Image (tube, rainbow, N blue to C red; front, side, top):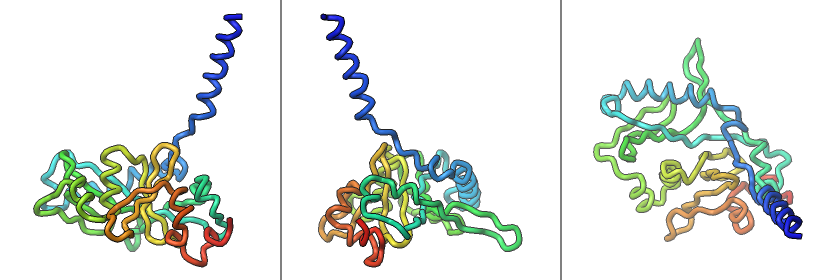
Length: 221
């Protein structure tokens, strides 16, 4: 009897863990951009080496917010709640050069020093600007309703695994993924500052603020 009881408990525990555990969303693998990220960071490193101030700094790190496009023709509201819309996302690129063109991921890149200060911001093909008096990213994100700097804070603190923005039909919004959940960073509520929602929560309350009126995501359940 005792052996049977032990076996039943082990059976429930083993399969209970299997049911509750959700797989981590790996957007880098899903989008197939591992090599593209390496190319992007090498190009940004070249830009940094040309910068009169940033080139003298040691221990710089890069954090990216990627611009993604989405096939929204047959989009449904339910896809935003169950994360299946992620399968429709595609990376976007910028091209440099006239004759011999090079293609790089379209992303906003934050350059941070070894103490966590934001010292440069830009994208491939854009100038990097080293601040005269770098501020702590955490303090800047808390004092200013700036979603991109909040995204950077989340990435630095490992509260986000992947950060991105989306083109039409989504209004300009910033998203991030942590483990198996998609979140939205919003700064449009006056007097509140930056607020983080799970995407499913935001869709249920405020989908009209998220997508264009003509979007299938709004019209189709």
